[in-house]
Image (cartoon, rainbow, N blue to C red; front, side, top):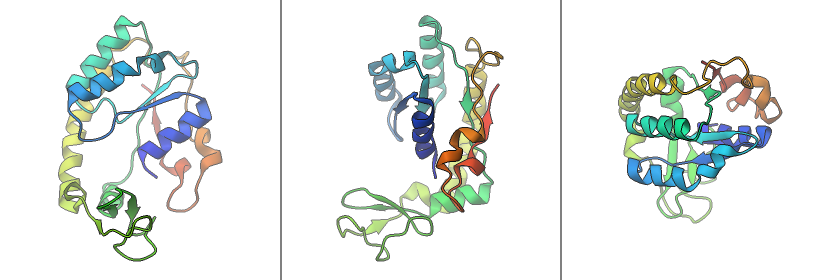
Length: 191
């Protein structure tokens, strides 16, 4: 179960607005998407930013927006998994050339190897899902993540004891069993 799936589970559990910006999109387009849905930032159940911010520029823009709008950042879910598990998850991912359906060789395999169940097209492994590529991406992520974390730690109320604490129990009803346990995976880091 990936971060997007867990963000959706938190959205359902907390009745929070879920804003997903996607991967491999330029900062300017991502920022336009965020501004378009900025009303979500005032949702009564809170908001979840899935995959955002990914860059220092995005983090700076978010910090400025939140300060200008007097919005509080109250929690930052931080998923921690061993490197070998991350590499296995990402390098096992396969995508359909036709309809873009996503499979996993062990966790969600197609009925017929290397063939999409939906449209019958061939499945492929993205270049950035190759084991060596995953390791390089993770090294870059760790460096960037530390800098983003420093920027967001300056947003009002981070570390404020009045915020709602998320726990593994927030996902307990959605525990999917061995290999996909949301309870096992969610390590909510509150600063």
